[in-house]
Length: 269
Image (tube, rainbow, N blue to C red; front, top):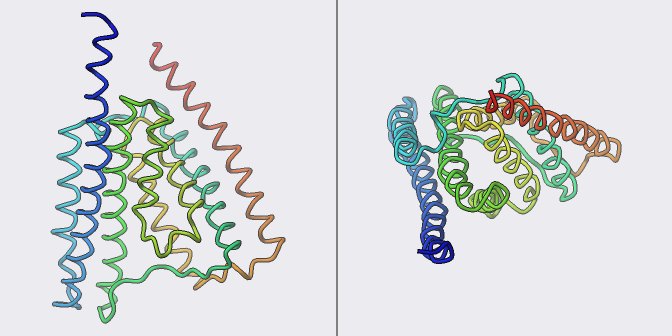
């Protein structure tokens, strides 16, 4: 059997695997999100003073994540090949650079933004629990499905660049469409940073922790500052945000190269 014949037979298999990974991961993500939010809402409607929803929600999310990693090896058990300090530094700088795009886009559209809130009519304990648990559940679900299942499988068959591009697009359009446009390019930038972190870091754990930290720190900042009218930003404010973003981007590129070199040295030993 010649090489051309083998390639011809392998092509349909590659297409099937990529389609299954792409749409299968998307379905799993929406199922986990729906289960998490509906369970929390049912808890809020039935017993608004006592939050019991974390048990079934986290059990479902962590259970599915564990099963997916055992089934497809999505990187949860993979150790970071580069030093943790470099990985953490890249995660911080790349997220700052990407969020600068997010802020500038909102200033362009003149939108207001406030930290998301939990269900109405619940106790303070319920609200705090909702913030922590839903942040962890949705962040873990997103990373498991998009950077885990989808990016891992697509990278094996299509290459890194194509895989990250497809994952970023699918993950972007998985956000609520009614609020997506004023932050579209910002979301693209953030998701690209996480996709690149998955590639150079090797481990899905770094992406999960980064996603959770980014969501919770961002929410905490906006809770402390209150609703922000991005349309009121002055030219000086926008230049300052752009400057911070460019410096962070330059540091991210430098750190990415350092991580890549460190990984190559470890593999050559």
